[in-house]
Image (cartoon, rainbow, N blue to C red; front, side, top):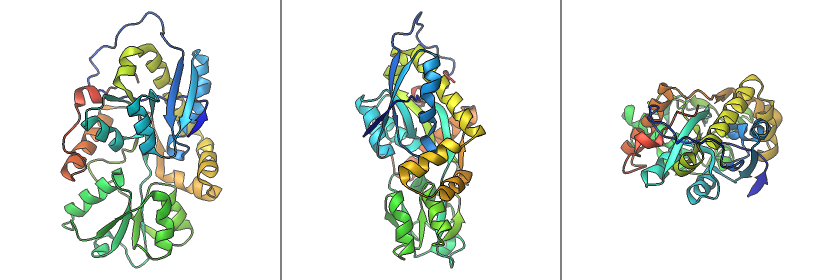
Length: 308
């Protein structure tokens, strides 16, 4: 786990009409943010400068993957951070008090396969690599069912970083990773684009800004400043994604041209609208229908758009 000075915030809780506890002064001026050195969460690297303006000392704790980061949030090792919406839903469905505070990054999914396969229907009886418990798995299960192809393809569970080589070696017929690994496979000539997993009820929903509900209620002023810094950092990336490119090159050791091209399928956005709220609920519904969770979170406290 790499410690970096940086800040980041996110929490879920529906009910914009509810009021946060009133504080006359900020009770804390330090915060620990959970992050991952990847393109989709790079806004965290830009947050400290904005938080410094508000007199807040931010420490960014970088974890190897989103799962470990969400576990750190669940254990209280960090108070706030970036997380996958499905990971947050999974933990919340098990009773963990989390709040999604803002949108962060959308898209990033892409199925790449051998040239002889043009559509999902062509992959009947074939092997598709997917990350277990991911949004892409949920989208694929939903899509195959909608096409009458449920169970028609063999799903092999791999980490996203191992998928391109598996495709290159012919161990699988198609892969459905998050960027930049889909672009890496395509630019190396190991496969071509087959399907963008955005035509499901979940749309392009992916990374969110999430926090423990207890932290938001205990330090509402601090939480608000962190969300504000997240929004400003994300807007900076919308104007210039150079920082995201450099993060991918440095953290994932990938070529700069791959990093740059992959960001064409990655959409930084702080927009936390009613449509965003509905997309989160759609993710939960899809996870329930595909057996990834057994019950829904309490949406009335899980989605909280009041701080944006």
